[in-house]
Image (cartoon, rainbow, N blue to C red; front, side, top):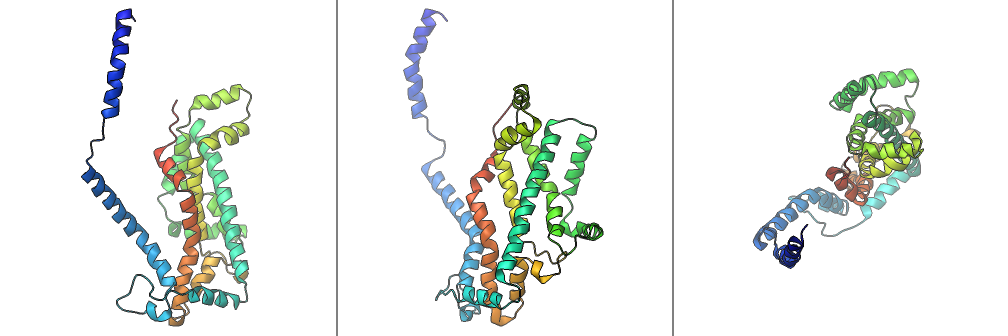
Length: 301
């Protein structure tokens, strides 16, 4: 660059900075207000079912049968929750046992699915082998079938294996959920192959590359996977495969209370809150990871 061009550049720099500072967004203040009002209305619509469920759980029995129904409780009370725990305490299987069954199935099923889906996705995304594309297409096709379609084949297979009426009848099928493999594979494809090759040149083994490089870089994806899997397993009644009362899940036991008639309407409202509180809390604490998954990691070759 000549001395003359350098001088012109130096002179134009302050002018360019002023242009950058003066640049304003195209939206007007009125447009921003309309946008925020619209987003607020959408948020209220989406939050309404949760607000109504919590409010119903705090209503006395007479308010639950008022017509037209009111959104908020006029005389809030926690009697529905106390009655629920009293009813659960009278069962010959304790509340803690139902809770343990659900937590065990949810934890083992989620961890196992995360490991299986992540390792399978890593191989499909970063390695070429005969049948690679065909196998992934098979996984994609499997996502088209709901659990109701595959329930009978699953039952026959689990019965042959002798896993009916055991925890494994719920846990093992959760390992093979195609949604997790699809999500992880699509996200891992965005990882730079050069990053993995550089690690191997430095002497890292396959396992070292997987858990030290690949998994930390796809954290938003596997956090999203954990949320989906916890929601699916926590709300699984497991009544199709588990018959023994001592192995039943908490959701199954709570929903049996809802069938107790009009006298248990208040307890039924409390059941809804107890069942949905864990998935909601997990989603709230992991919301940023879901948003980052949708935006992608930003790593490019």
